[in-house]
Image (cartoon, rainbow, N blue to C red; front, side, top):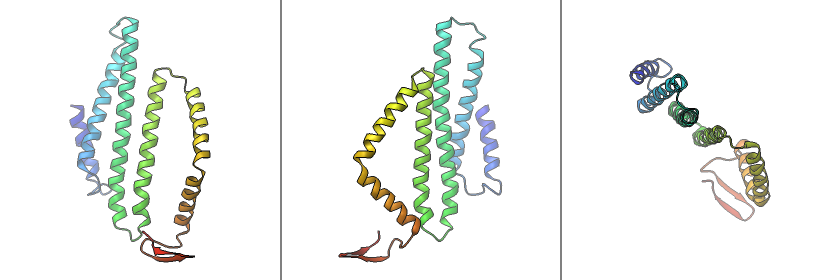
Length: 184
């Protein structure tokens, strides 16, 4: 019942002036289904203490429900990002510049990565893993990786600077010293 109600609400919102022909109906269906699962899990989460199970069983059931909710929260946010992607792709198609066509997929990937990492950190927190030691270890590993990949980082920063300054675009013919070619 919850899924059908949410599906109707989301479809009505998608038909408004803002969402007309921009939102993918399959993604809307997935989002409403995920939210309905989360509502059911929340109701179960509320009623587990009420049924007075033994403490050990209650603890593991509540931990499993927290992991379940975290997993479905990550799925929900990933689908919301996909919904935003489908919306912005329709808008980006209408623009003349190609830079927004190139930046949108990169931004979407970065956003999805942050969502997945945040979900993993929350699941580790549910199982009482010491996150400070994990983050300290990752920062030391990140420092070692940064020192090993200095040239790659320099090239990446140079690419960002070229992209930001836009001295040339894809298809331009360029000669720099002995190097001559077309920008791809």
